[in-house]
Image (tube, rainbow, N blue to C red; front, side, top):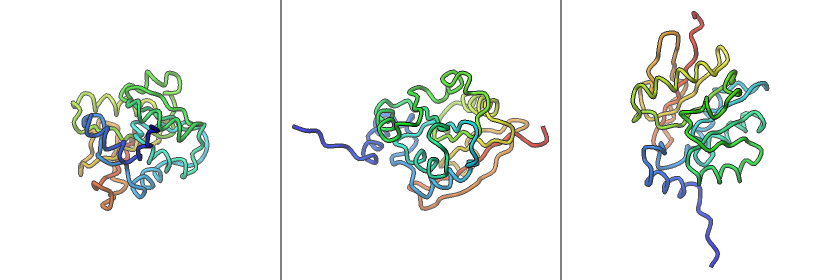
Length: 191
């Protein structure tokens, strides 16, 4: 008997229920949230945009709609089912299967001058040292002034700021299920 394709929403829910500490939400990001995240990326060509934890590709789609070329987009996803789905939906985007918290190792030389990083990883439940390392690695990988964009349920910045890093809430999307905040981290201009 032929298999029936599983919708992205249902597949996302299944992965969330199976691995709630690895999948940030029971449903993919809504279109409005995805657009608000993508708006934080400078659409001018030049340099890579890295997406950490793309899930089923809701934000990936919005990043592409923002004008980011497929050849300039790299996504790192740990869930094999999501990786297969992403590769089928975005065949020209570089999809890497692996632990996004280890993105510097996975990217190698490409981790040196990123123009933006978009992070949908569930960071709140991670130990503080792990969150600090993620932000430190991101700041080291980004060009000066480039954004690290983290979206989260948290009404407070989900990653603790270190000296020399500024954070601002770029958006709150209340109509998303659940409501989400878009946080943008950058190296301080006074460094």
